[in-house]
Image 1 (cartoon, rainbow, N blue to C red):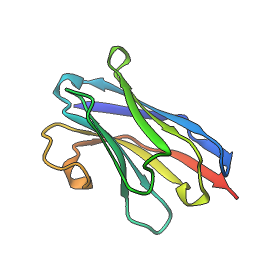
Image 2: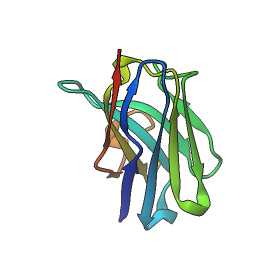
Image 3: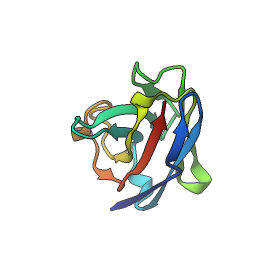
Length: 124
C-alpha cells in the first residue's frame, strides 16, 4: 500500500502562483509514476501532469503546458506541482495519484492509489 498526502492548496488571484506537494509513504518503491489530476464541481476528473519515477520523464495536459511544472524529490518521497499564471478555470480539487504498472498516463483507471485532494481556488 502507498499513502499519499497533498498540501499547498489555497485561494489565489488570477495570474498568481501556488505550489502543491504530495508526500508518499508506505511501499513507495513499487511506484512507477506519480501524477496530479483535478476535479471541478460537476466535472469529470482530468489529468494535469505526471512524472515517471525512474527517469523523471514528464507529461502535461495541453491546458497547463507552459504554466505548470511537475517535479519530485526522491529523498523526501515528495512530488510537487508548481502552478504559475493561474486562471479561474484552474479552480478545482487537485489530487495526487500513484501508478504501479505504467499502463496508462492520462486515465484515472491507470492509477492505483489516490490522495484526498487539496482545494485550489483562483479568483478573477
